[in-house]
Length: 358
Image (cartoon, rainbow, N blue to C red; front, side, top):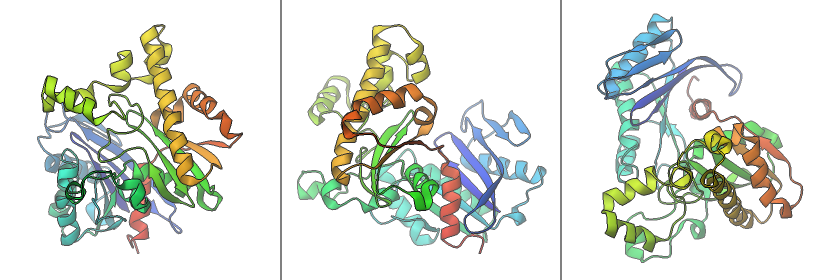
């Protein structure tokens, strides 16, 4: 069985899969520990649903493994552990076994994702401490976009800054990889994929490869999101930093903007139900800018054969899908697909492709 570990800043999601033929997987158990580092840490895994003490990720993962063992899944039953790593930089561009060199690469990319990569590494180190001989694999949230051409990833800034790693990377790569996996042999040649949730982005997928995406150096760029501004002029950012200070400006752009900044809530369900001008404007803004960026992605692919929606909003909100597609009606009548997001399963698929369980 393969244990998938998706470590966030204050939570660890896990899933256990049993491989069968090829890359087919049966989910045996899934759940998470939330509130890590705080007084209200909680485990919800299988039949375990209780508050626990989890001051750090090591303790949380130990609690997860103890819970799995108590529910009949021992460490000796596992053939591999597979991890989500948010940022692989420019060197880690495909799923791979975890080695000392890979760990060094993840550490090197940490300045690009300081809130995420350390927690992803904590999951890897915790598994190593619990089971030193268990093979581990890593999947990178940026890797799917490594096929973007240089002209799509380079900012028009001085070479000195570009050499420091300031470029477009793109995110939500595991979500887009899962969409490609789900289509299989029926994958459209030119697919416009939307990942719409609290974080929102889109990807131009041509012949199964990402050729353009809306997020850039960080997940802030691109579409209007739950609490992130999306695309904004750099000079406006500098002005906000001048007024509020750099840290406060960063917090405003990442935590207080987007739907929340426009409509007072980052919950699309509440905004759709609200009868206020602010809520209506926030929803209109979200759909309009999703379509505006979609036009750019269609150019990158040289046309459009189908559209796919995933993520919490993309999967569950037909009104939002319809409104975005209404903006794109000029492109003709293209098939629209809804794909349920499953990053954990994609991570397990990636691990199998790297030899896990063989």
